[in-house]
Length: 175
Image (cartoon, rainbow, N blue to C red; front, side, top):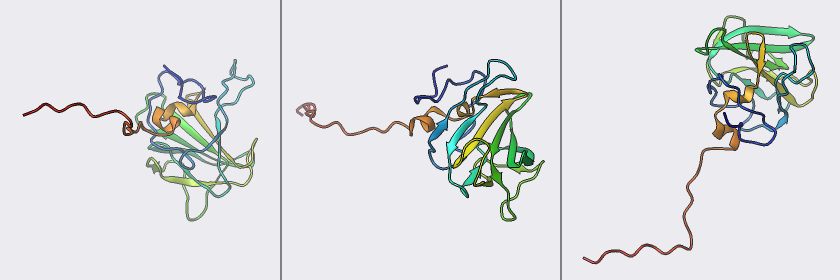
């Protein structure tokens, strides 16, 4: 399939349905670091994308699903959501660092809707500050999370028709 529509955004993963209709943070956050798949299961790489997001920004589920994990891993808040209707094994999105508070709390087993707030971006992350690390897996295989988004979200929006200027109107037939 064609690329995701922007420089450095990576190639679309075959077999990943376009299920998201919004970004996990903001309207169109900057991609600070793209997906770099490892050559081997334990090799070097970047198993997700880093999206610019200030501390306290709401983190939203990109698609409907069930929370499969909500807790701390290596001192960071992590939320994982298995996406509804995405095959067997289902696609699973991950979000970190996410703070879950009394006002916004998700737990393992909770059903979430697309766009539902899962928590907020914690002030510090694992490898970047001021960002959300967003991942995508099918089973144990990491995929490009940007492949969940429709191309118009990656390219900045749907096409817009503009008026044609400087072109004379066609002659009208006489009655």
